[in-house]
Length: 364
Image (cartoon, rainbow, N blue to C red):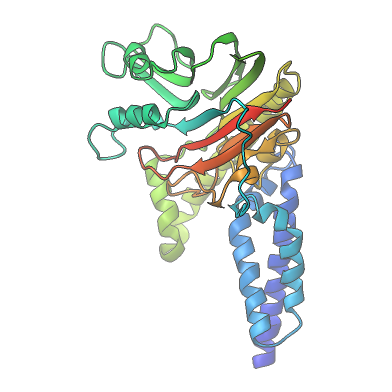
């Protein structure tokens, strides 16, 4: 009986090992061509944990089958480091360099719809941003409401230390409420533009910013979200222990939404990455990618850019702390001619995203 059980465990081990390999290579496959691979990329951390469990099990029973999971874990090591960083040795910034602080934050409409049952979240977010004293601020899910404390002028007044602004709304300009994206800077903007996405309320903007004698291009993006309602997230939390056949329709509905989001995001990423490649200036890309580091989105956008978290970040890099997925989905990426330091995920709970910051300067 013991031999039979171990054979079953071995078969499951082989299966999870194969899944880990497939999830690792899924980043090279566009969801437009084969969307199912995107789901395996999303599941990468869980498949990895299963393989670690098998590794420990076989070592504890003193069987050589531990090599199966050990090999696939080593093969997936590059993806693992995208979730956890140590960076023991701190990068020292030369004293004669002009260092700029960059902050990126999905502010979730400044909590206008009271997702957080806390008073004055709007004011707290703006006070937090102001106190961070960043030279460049990139905000996603930006929101304004005319003739209120949420108005564009009120926000500009709160952030008056960064007087240059690039704001783009995705709804009609004459509406009272504005939904969009915003970049603020202490440095002048010599050019502004938009990368629009078809059939989507998501958007990316770029701002050419003059810093001393140099000009850099800041891309601020918010890519396609899954657009799941709160009850769908609650359902995902509950099915692990309460699953029954009646949940099948819900699972299908959620799967279709995720599939549609992956396909739309792939189209957006292809368009954005092409635009970035044609930039006349060194690029800093930041924003809410709505995708994990093991994804086509991340792979495509990081082809010619460095990830600031990998360069100087520490610890677990999760930036989204909602119910699903609780992963790193907010990023700062940069051209090789730009040096970053002191990347941090700031653990404040004023949105469903943590803000991220880093310092940067242009090398000669």
